[in-house]
Image 1 (cartoon, rainbow, N blue to C red):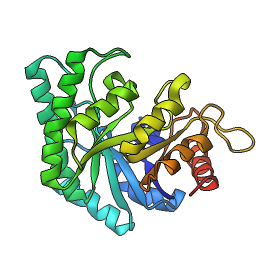
Image 2 (image 1 turned 60 degrees about the vertical axis):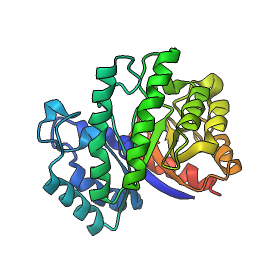
Image 3 (image 1 turned 90 degrees about the vertical axis):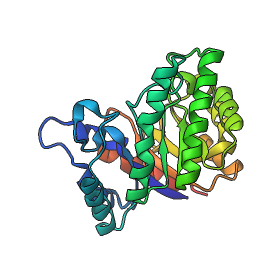
Length: 271
């Protein structure tokens, strides 16, 4: 099992008011603090030319080169970027959806500069119920992104996150309809509701290119109190998944302890 660290695990450090963690320091921290040499980044923590317009304002090329150099110096590989706040890919308003697609386009160039093989785009939609029109719109959006992904040699990923993607059957429907070798699922252990978490993961596992191994709170035995880590890992083992498991600690407790215990739990059931 190959383990990565999702930046969201330590999001409070990036967001703290005093002395926030800089993205440039993240690669070194991942190795020094957690002994993990593969990382996922999050778009909100990038340094933008205009922080008020993250969706459209380009990230400066010199900054990206510094970030790549920082990763190289720490012998760390940037394996993915979780992109948020870039518009509704499932919008039934053609102009809004077109803008959302364009907002995501720059991430192919950013990934290439960083040597990163994939980024995640949210499916769009709102709430837990999606209309046929929204699903069609999201499918068309991902079809366009997948074309760019193929040209760039980058994977575009759809996470079971919220909105349209809260339904695993809809995720499979969209991934199957787009039918691109550069488009697949980012499967998150924790994002499906409790009542169909394992069933949902089983459905998207065959289409998965990256996993968020999300954990929340641990008991005395090192098991998550809510998310059955062993069962989740077994699903991907049976699906012959051979990709990364990116630790995404999302608990209220100490994030250092959360990441360390998440790593130990993954290693306990590694295959």
